Length: 153
Image 1 (cartoon, one colour):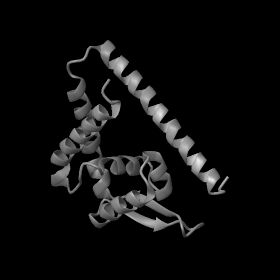
Image 2 (cartoon, rainbow, N blue to C red):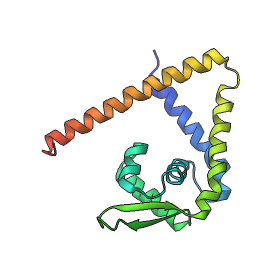
Image 3 (cartoon, rainbow, N blue to C red):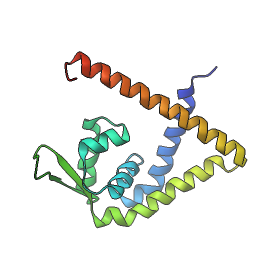
Image 4 (cartoon, rainbow, N blue to C red):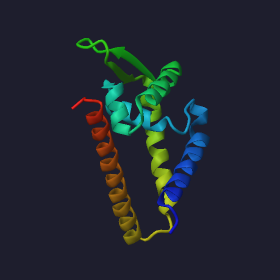
């Protein structure tokens, strides 16, 4: 049996290329759509919360947010209660591009499943949700194991 990640990885890379092509004229790359969506949906989210929400390490989130800030899509400010916490807010530019990003994802999904029956779509989504939930549990288990070994718990 072929490794599952081969199919998931190749599909993801194709999605990134598709988004790169569609979002380039807006000043976004194929990885930044998630940031736009989550920040517009959760204005004032902390960088750490965002990293946890999208399962990306903090340093990568910081780099992407710096690019988004430089290009005028977001602003960041320190939390008044805890200056170490950086809050992230969408600018009008991000709010304006949000519907296009959202529609682009729907368009990509529709393209991928256009030849599937309703039942096949249901099965695919159900199985992918199970795979995703297993992956999340595994990552959480590893994080807890790492925290224990570092004496954080």
